[in-house]
Image 1 (cartoon, helix red, strand yellow):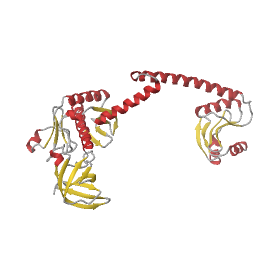
Image 2: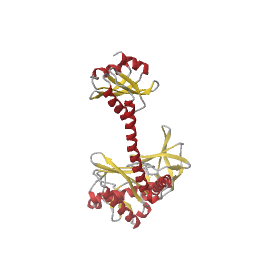
Image 3: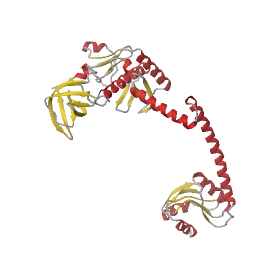
Image 4: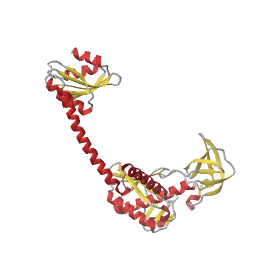
Length: 382
């Protein structure tokens, strides 16, 4: 027996009564089928409705061979009263209808097909099989919101087989019968089984939040509609207010304040590089020229460690081993020489001192997981 889909007839039904047809144990839940239901099952990228049946929580809903199965936490029988969690249902209606409007406009301007759609409690995404530029996104967003303001009718219906042959509509699948269409007056016609708003005004604000590349040359969009768009705006405004407070700047001048701070940071970084170079030169000057190998620890790190070793090798005839670290955490090293080929030394030293690393142009960089005394003893006895 196929379940009568009340949500198909009226997306605004929040409560209903139905007869339990079957109720069987299914893992940690009971699988309940009813003669009719207002619960939309998971499908087409949209999560299922949640709610209760006679006070028993409905945790998930799915459709199998025309039967809609409600997964509950308790056994049910007889006549039950169903209640939909309306706020969640309407949120999905807003975002799904908004997705149709955005997808329809993108198809209108590019011919692109919507090849993926996902609507969860926290995110609404839609993907297309072509690249979509920022200018078009802005144009589509503005036009979609204009259509919202115009309060256009949204109609869900099943056209006759004859009528269906004459219609051009969007669909991810090749459909031939029982095709349910969602029509946004003057904007879109798309096959869809989900509940939708009855007018564009109910969608509320439509915001295209971001985009990213999708598969072979496609584009994935992240959107928010209605209350989700409001919450997204509130989140951004809170962030801007916090930044404004931290920068001691008016909200409308935060970008200029950040730019000024960025320039100051770059200036400080440039000056810091100069100071580091002077410190390296002083450190090199403090070391006497040597005919022997030299092993030395320092507080330089990263490229400064390499630069220190590179300058030091001009004062040393043997090899130069510069270390930064301690016995507990190990040592970062730079091994180099201006006169001796170090390539035969690098791998055996890594093996002996539990190290890893390598390099080129007669300079090696890496790490030793050994104590300083053991490193020093190893290189003094090369």
